[in-house]
Image (tube, rainbow, N blue to C red):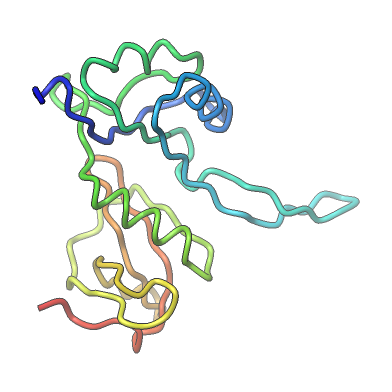
Length: 169
C-alpha cells in the first residue's frame, strides 16, 4: 500500500454549526468519519430538553487516504483540513480511539480546550468506566482531570477521582 492509499485520521474544519449535516453527507458518500457528540440539557423558557451537541465545535474527523482529500473537501459544509506547512495534518489513530473511549465512558460532561497545556504526568485510569484510558493528569482548581491530546487540534478533558489514576511507568 502506498502512502497515498494509507488511511489516516484528519480533522476537517466545517462551516459554523454544520457539523451534524456534514456528518450526514459523509455517511451518504461512505466517507469514514467521527463526530464527537455529547448529550446536554438545554433550557428554554417553556421546557428543558436533552440535545446532542458537538464536543469540538467546527470540526469533524475523517479517516481517508490522500487520494480522497478532494472528495472530502467537495462535500458542502466541509471547508478545509487542519494544515501545517500547507499539508493536512494526520492525527494518530490511538488519539482518536482514546477520545472515543473518553466520550463513550465518561460520567461527567466532556470539556474541550484549545489552550496550550504543558505536558503533565502521564497516567492510566485503573478504575471506573474509563479504565485503561491513558492520558495526562491535570489538577485544575482541586479537580483532577485527565487530558487526551489531539495533535495540532487541542485537548479533551474529563474529571476523575484521583484514586482512579495511576502513574504510567
